[in-house]
Length: 201
Image 1 (tube, rainbow, N blue to C red):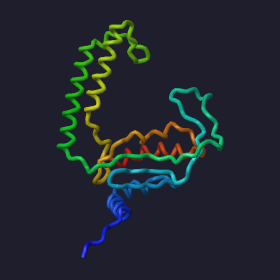
Image 2: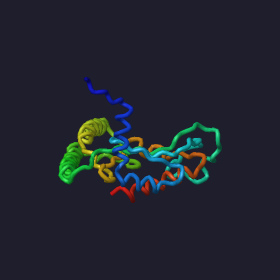
Image 3: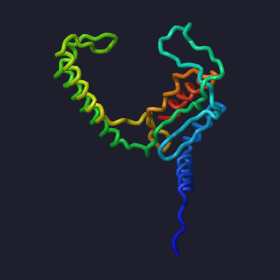
Image 4: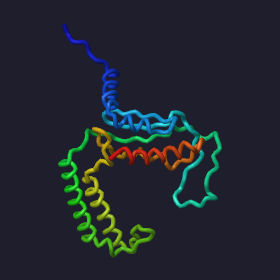
């Protein structure tokens, strides 16, 4: 008699339950401010505010205080969340090998900058400003080669939480520049970032 199939939903629930069985995740969840929840699967950690907020603007770094947007309800709704990628805990040899690879790439990047004489190109606000067709050609060639080298870098875990290595992702901090109503939700989100630093070693 064929064995019954386990549904995808039950399998996914089992994975989530296994990840949450780690006491490190439970300790982090219990430290969250009221109104926030944590969901951990085998591949992702999501810390989410339970209620959507109104977006009232966006915080710009170094903007004068007078430019701050007043929090007025009625903007688009958004659910504030922090997303981290999870992998099985990296071993010391894995981290050491990644660091060796990255040091090698750093050396190649320095050699590349010397090859194209990037330091000789004038900069403005920290960015190169080519003054001739030759400088522009050198800069373009350098940036193309630099992108290829940078893509080979190994992303190291931000930290370790229980049996998982934690990585920042493109969406991890994307919402932290928003201004929202109620404003205390964003204050709590920044506090959670600090909580992660305390709980994730």
